[in-house]
Image 1: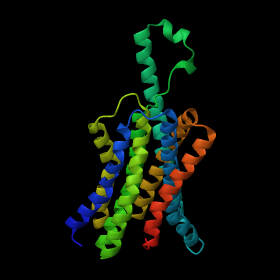
Image 2: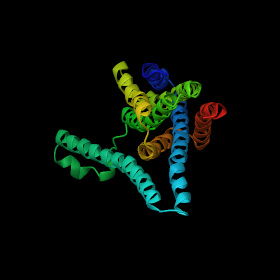
Image 3: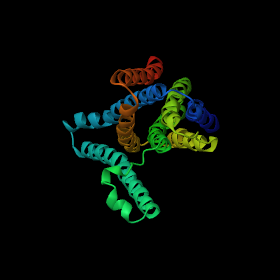
Length: 280
């Protein structure tokens, strides 16, 4: 398969995520429906974290088995990369959110006057966790995950496994539609609709890395890079899930939250089974 055709297939797989984004512009939905959509999206993210960690663990476990009969240097390198990627993916968003919260508090103090900071307790300062903020964090986490999917498409095409690469494109395209819904759901509860420009930006951040990964994977594939991007994605998604669950608890009854999480997880798992059935 030529590089041009491979890149085109990678673009199709990645940008199919745009199909799920218009959900963000729906308005007039009851609060219970908004909460259920949030829980459904959270369930999809829970599946993605499980799937990403499972894939990232395979090279680490293989290196551990190999260390029994040889040197342990490769295992140490993989283990350090796994832990470091998770830490950077998770904590970078933690500190970014803290910085944004402090900036928000400072701007509010300037607007309300110096006495506002004294009159209002620290807990009165709202956290910066709007639907758009959550959606962008989800898009970043999914983008890192989709980069690894692009690597798989590119590597398969370069090795001559054309039919396998095509199956990967179809499976990842279907999978990314559900991911697009995961990005869009948090914005459905915002007061104002997100612009089409913002949705396009979120789609580019989440789906574009599939195209980039396809280009890289066609030329060279490095297992260390593969593990790094998977663990960065896992850490970022874990942070986003904590934010989404916090929102979901305020918008849902425990029963609705539970059903939403379950159905979202099964939706993600079901699309993944398409790849497994095809032998990926």
